[in-house]
Length: 102
Image 1: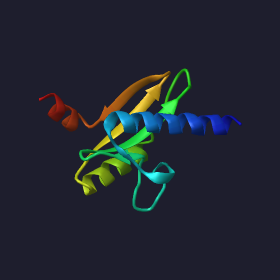
Image 2 (image 1 turned 60 degrees about the horizontal axis):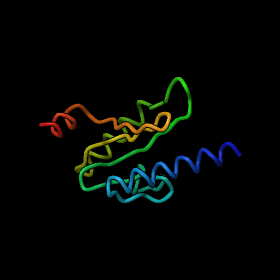
Image 3 (image 1 turned 90 degrees about the vertical axis):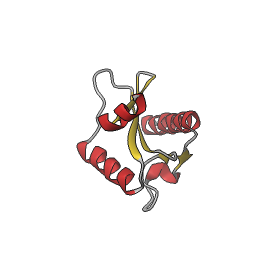
């Protein structure tokens, strides 16, 4: 039951982020062979993470490196959309962030 609730919450986060970004979602939460990660825009390859945990969220180094590699292969910037206690954050490479604010 708890697993079903977490899946529903993750699905809802992905839908909200995709709508906000105007992104195309990848079926199966990006588990396919050719459409990895959760969604993409013209400029970004996006992976969503969320937690209800009060103390931490786990973002695995291998996941960050894989997202970065796949994004580069597609000519896109990698981005993690992270939800913590209902607040949305975006984790970007510093170079991509600097380009956005320039």
